Image 1 (cartoon, one colour):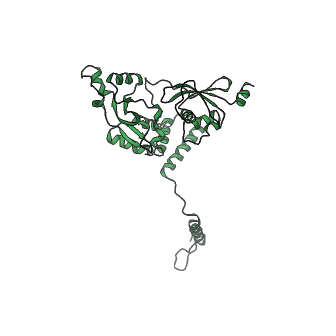
Image 2 (spheres, helix red, strand yellow):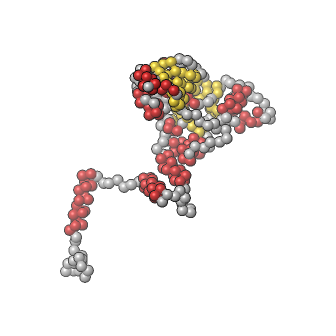
Image 3 (cartoon, one colour):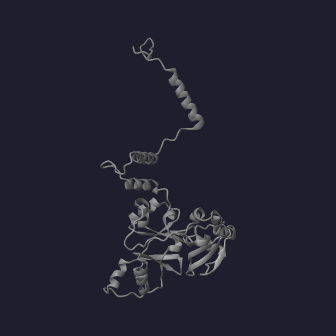
Length: 315
């Protein structure tokens, strides 16, 4: 008989008191603290990727074993693991950046806008962007542009229906719906059924594979550019969260639901300010000078620091 394995008279193994104690303690922990949550497959995969990256760095090699996942593949897997956490509002092109055409515009206007914007799909609105009635695909205009079809009296024959989705919809759900309905453009609606933004199939795919640029894409300009004397030139689309980190955290101090510098200028002025107009953000003392505006939105701003900060920069 092996040492440490006592048996009773019938030859059966005697109960181990330590196992009873362990079971009792496990039961008490479950009663007091609840069952420990088992790790999800998502978390296990992410932990495995992190461990692999650490091992690769320790070995100081960027070349994975043959057939193994490369660094870019691992990043795609990570993006995919978190893709379902995004809503369409997280990914959508904001309303201020939507390029659209009025329903009553001529075909010549449409052709000019396609050439200027470089997009394959143009939303069509009635009166305001809050009433988007459809979209026009450039392929539907090819025959007309080539002279193989007559120029229509209105844009109506060319208009197709996009998807209309709430801003709270999951990005993964929208991707599945776009595939099912073979539609590559969705209009994102806010809680009042107004237009919040726009989303294409490509935008969703880029959340997984990364930014996809083609030969028509221009080099993106910096959102925030420092100037002499503590001034900053800024794209009106710059997020206040980024402005707070880069320039002054007080600039994000605003009670209204505003996300961008352009929105901040609009709220302070109570309307779309005109080029050359200067508005002051009272909470921070920064002044926002409007450099460019088209009457519907502000596109470029110059930020002037508070007097005390300007003196500090000069010194």
